[in-house]
Length: 272
Image 1 (cartoon, rainbow, N blue to C red):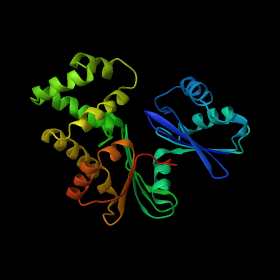
Image 2: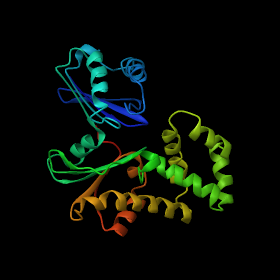
Image 3: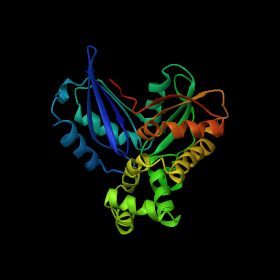
Image 4: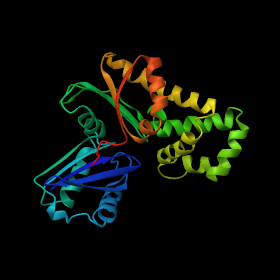
């Protein structure tokens, strides 16, 4: 049995496959850049292995994990955890989430693969491997177009841009105040997940011109600071991630303004 995982900062999707039969399972995000070894082991043991319908660990023969934070330095730690968890497996592969996205989007064709979820990333893919990658730099220094940056930009505009009526609607719908936002961002774990969660409100209110414009401008920054560096405007840019999927209209507007071609847009690379 093959186990393939798409690991993001907010959630991880796991897919088992045997004799053409596939099943999906979900846990919270696994990211070796932000989480300790104990935290990741706890998620796998408590959320995955105990999930109803998940096969026994001994039944897994191959594990392919593509995830956020799986850099050359951090991937071996997660590989060790997976080897310990699935000791009967013949092979455990841990790679970056952008490599997994590229393979899902383009298979053996050339293209520019992009992720827009809680974080963002992109790469130039030659049909087999990544040949160029602009470092995403994380949601504080980069991650343009990501859910975390959308949330961060929205909060700034909401409280410092004179949008008092929208502020009232936001606080009523979400139950959040400015003080609680600050608490979540500066004092609680996973502020990137919290900021990305605000994309739900943003999506519901893109009929407000300033919100729509803000979203489009965030996506334009993604193209300017990432895609333009590959200098391959003739290649399609294809996307995976919930932000790309739910804001596809605004994404296509931004791409047209920046002279980029949009190919596929998928919510996640592992689809039944």
